[in-house]
Length: 126
Image (cartoon, rainbow, N blue to C red; front, side, top):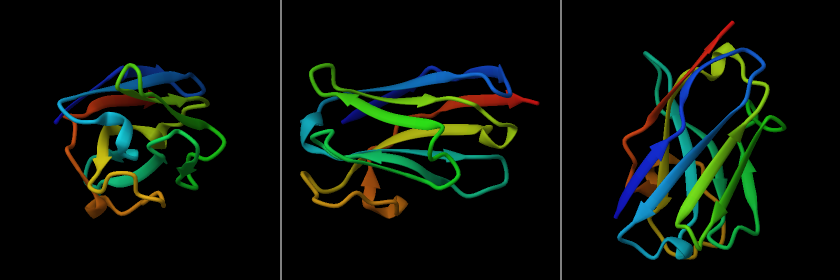
């Protein structure tokens, strides 16, 4: 499976960005998907996850109310709408697919995901 994340860029604090992640080579619609991010000098951290059906989502506390994860299984794509961006949101953003098909619960542990995309840089200037 291949994941291609794109849509990052340089924005000012308070702006919005929408990231996209296109998947190929796998039954995309059977897997929960997640977004993670990694800032310089820090570990990769969970941002958001969405169930394979799109029926439920889960967010890190730091982004809840500002970010929205969604998916379009017909297009094999998952999105991350990021509003009210802050300087602390600056990081490389990665999408990933859950290891287990049709998992009931959304996971935040990085070890539960595989098939990582190459990441897209988001830089928020204050």
